[in-house]
Picture 1 (tube, each protein chain N blue to C red):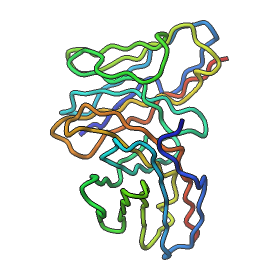
Picture 2: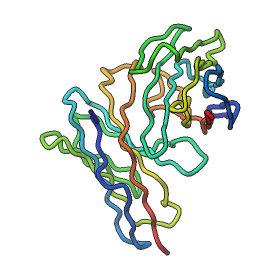
Picture 3: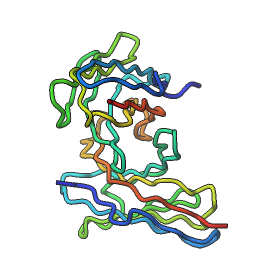
Picture 4: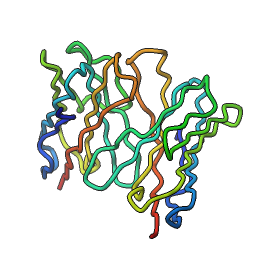
Length: 115
Length: 113
C-alpha cells in the first residue's frame, strides 16, 4: 500500500522551460510535505517543504503547491537548468509539531533537463 | 561543518552473515533515522533513535536492530542477511530546532551474494 505516489518515473524538459513534478498521497494524517533531490552516489538533499496549513511555498526557482482536497502536491522549477537533472523524491509525514516523525517517500521522478 | 557521515560506503556480504553500518549525525543533531532504499524505490523508514532509545520503528523484521551512542552516533545491525537486503542504507539526522527536515548521508551500498 503506497501512501505517497509519484506516477511519472521520468520527465524530460528543455533548459529554461518549466519542470512540473507531481505527487499524490492517500493518508489524510499527513500534514507536512517535503521534496528532496538526489544525485547518483549521494544522499537525498532537502529542497523545499510545505505545511498543510499553506497551499504554496516558494524558494527561488522552486515552488511547491499543495491541494489538500485532492491530496496532491506539485513542485515547479522555473527556469529549469541542466544542473537540476536528478531524481526528485516527494515525502510526507504526520509530524505532529515535533521532531518525532518519520518520512514516507514516493518512488521518485528522474528529471532530465536538456541544454 | 560536517554533514552526516556513513561508513563504509560499499559492502559485500554473503547470505546468512551479519553486518554493521555506522553513522555520525550532523553537528547539533540528536536524532538519527535509518532508511533502506531498494533499487528503483524510494527510501523506506527502518527506525529512529533518540536519547539512545528506539523511538519509532517501520515495518522491518527483528533482524534489523540498532543502537545510538551518547555522542548521538548510531549503528544499524542486520542479522541473517538475505539477498533481498541488498540496498542503499541511508542515515538521516535531525533536531527539534532544525526545521529543514532530515539531513541525509550518502549511504552505504550493501550487496548480499
